[in-house]
Length: 171
Image (cartoon, rainbow, N blue to C red; front, side, top):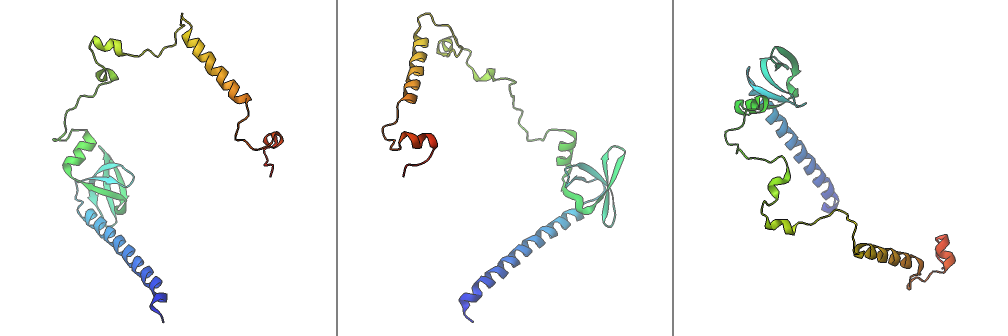
């Protein structure tokens, strides 16, 4: 047999091998993570619920989802075993030690200047009745130009008037 005919099969087998190998690595890492669970450890389920491990059984784990409320989950339903500091920060809302206390304004007032000279540079976007009629004359000119453009046929338009109305080509 020719090597060129076998090459696609070799590439396909190699790709399948690499895919199954990475899947096995992920399964092994998930099993190691679940082995780290001990009673009192904080976990996040695959559904996104945070709970504390109370009891570990063969295929299941008993989680305390709220004080005095216990639920039985499959071990495969545990998505992540969390560090104690991270679990406390998420569940109790305690800030992390390295968090920066940044002040965030409630509105955009911090983005504007408080200087008096900045007042002249502000633009007024409100409609106003103009006394001199310049704004209305400009608007009238624009409307007239738009009407003229609609009525005049385009110079480079090679289709006859009948074809334009029907939407077909004359050729």
